[in-house]
Image (cartoon, rainbow, N blue to C red; front, side, top):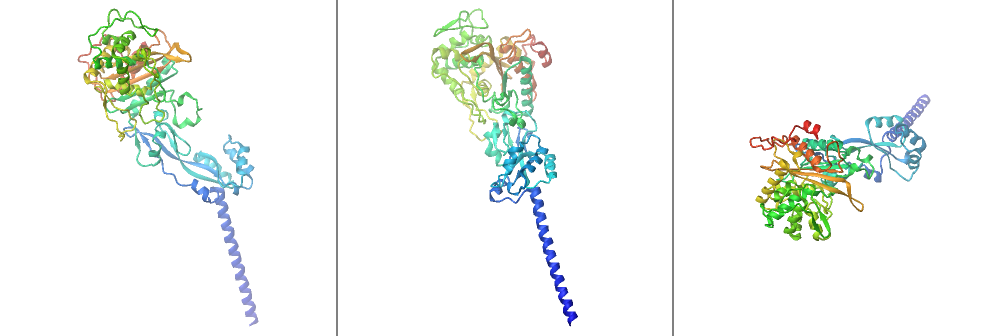
Length: 551
């Protein structure tokens, strides 16, 4: 019995020892697991941190009209810390700096030393390799958060249209900003009206013009006049949305010159004045105007760059770009009717395109005689290129104008509004065609595509007045003139004079538009027609390569 009793007592002690050992092992295992979690993922977030960790909805993609991807969201890692779980903040900061040499160790050490905080962002947007390098450090109190970050696979293509999003996915510019709520809600991709191929051609020719004419900036628009859809919108210098965060606030690449800047565009306004005069009955197509002598309005002397021998018809005023003739038409039209047509064309307000940075025009407080005169040929009023391209579409859409859009299938009301009659639009289109075949726009001609358009050269505003050496050069066009559908506008800021060239629009903006049309017309399915072609002797009708080598 004693042996039994002794044996039972020993057995009980052994059992208790085993239980204690098991409990201790289990406890150490719990501690080890928790320690590993702290080292790898940080401490379990408390209420305040949990809100930061709410799973965000993946931002919707942006695609062009054909479904080509322009903006998407990719998964990245972000590094955070819980200062409460860090024993040596300086050691942790130094370790992180070994992976990210640009780390401010003192600043990070201070942040990691604040034990009143449960959450501190250390670095956002880590690559998998960077995440692995931090993980291998084995530092306490750190964790990783998988996030969604915006990416733009086509780089600068349509960069100003797309805009960009911030670190937390919020839209900061362009469509990303204007349509932020729709994109943030996720779901189906947002389709733009942009055609990537047309956009690429427009950007490429604008870049070529930048190199050839040494411009300070530029803009281009390709518009479907029938429905207001923007097929291409470019600004130079370009912007890569992937790198927008690296640009300074005043970097010129940030400005969308097609929508967010306004310019005095010069003589491209003349067809609008002539159309208003014809449509109102103030003038007729057969009228002739004396344009040899300068005209003085309110003490200001208005002259012509391109002299016309003898009285000029409205068609000759357009094709040879007569300031004097246009002013005389404006006088017969009257300031009130002039204002009415400009207002109907939408030139007195910002373009309603879906871009938050769409700029408001600069117009005079009142239309006195001198303002009415100068605005008739595009001076004294500054508008955005997209606003003017929309107004110019009146000639390509039978006298009607449709508000522009960048969103395909937009439900926004964009009813066409009639500004001038269809016969007037057709008549002015013939004049614009004549301006290309036998006027200031000959370098815009493209064989078979019947380009119609108007040059515009305006002295560039400078503090205290206007520059005598720098111009804003533009060319506004529609094609094909026998059945117009599309508008192409190019604006060049301060093009320089090259060998054998001038700095007016006929030497730079006009040939740039010609090259754009030559590239995009086949993409749009416009068939070239040569059966009644009347420009076989035009020396400027050559291939793209030939024109570039001779201009």
